[in-house]
Amino acid sequence: MNLRYIYSFLRIMKTSGLYWIMKDWEIFVRMHFIFSAFECGLLNVLMTPRDRDSLIEELNAKRPELLDSLLEVGLAAGELELKNGLFGVKGKRSRAVMGVNGDMLAGMIQANVTYYSDAYRNAANRIHGGELGDDLGEIGALVARFSKIVEPVIKDFVSGIVRGKSPMKVLDVGCGSGVLLKSVYESNINATGVGLDVDEEVVRQATENISTWGLSDRFEIRLGDIRHVYDEIPGPFNVITLYNVLYYFEVGERAGLLRTLKSMLSAGGVLAVAMSFRSGGKDLASANLNMVNSSLKGLTPLPKLRDVTSILKQCGFGNVEVHRFMPGGSFYGIIAYRER
Image 1 (spheres, rainbow, N blue to C red):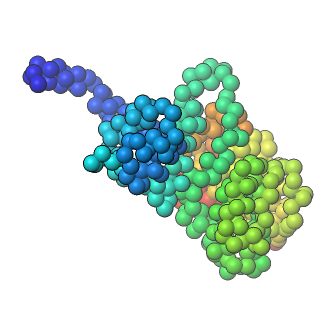
Image 2: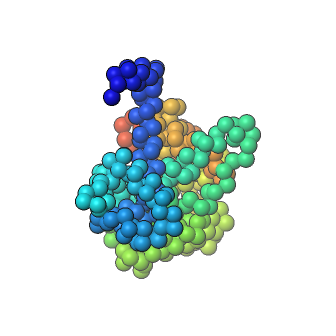
Image 3: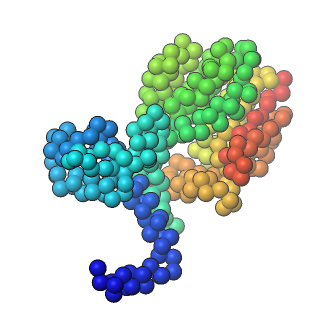
């Protein structure tokens, strides 16, 4: 290679900020590769090495040239390998997506490439008054999948509330995959209750999960909006949980919601809230979530922690405890007690 070209390239790389942007670009390309390879079934098939012709047949590839392009990206990103004419999965990220916790990890990638990305791609238009995104009803099942990542934290939080207590009747508002109810039962085998969600696909998923876990005789999954069906749900409850739900309600609705939930609690009952709050720019995960919330119809910006604790006290909850889950983070749990 002519040294002249090397010097020219080195001059290009001295462009201020270019190196760091290129490193971020590599991450961007890798994430999009994993997204595409997971969605089209390529990663699943390549858990056993295959040659090109086998891939075309098994994936029913009508455009082999596009499959070839995806394979080349995978090789260049180090996520795939080619040995003796056989393609296989090489990268740690791709292997993890196909592993034990793969569905949760795949959900994270799918969310970031789709509706998280959409929030930024359309930010300029929406800041200037363009229509907000209207696909909230399509992402519920995806949110339920990747939300499992914080299951250990939520499990510890809920376990401290329900362990060793009887009776223990629980209402999980916005139950998602149903995993919180599973955690409640694992901490207290006396637990029974109801999971409620407004998303039909999420309710189907949660119902299947509860059945698979052998808990159908302990928990019922219902479809509905707590604002409209609260008087149809058999109470009272010893514990009511709100996990990443409060920002689905407009600010003016929250006091009414919390009073309704308080009325559904037994004497001495507990309302447990867990969610991300506004961080003032100190927590990237919270700030990113707030960006998405502000971009979609049916969601509101994340509230401030002090605003929520203040509303709870105004609604008549006697003692309000705040639990910080991660140092430096803005993901908190709140325990609010109904007085006896």
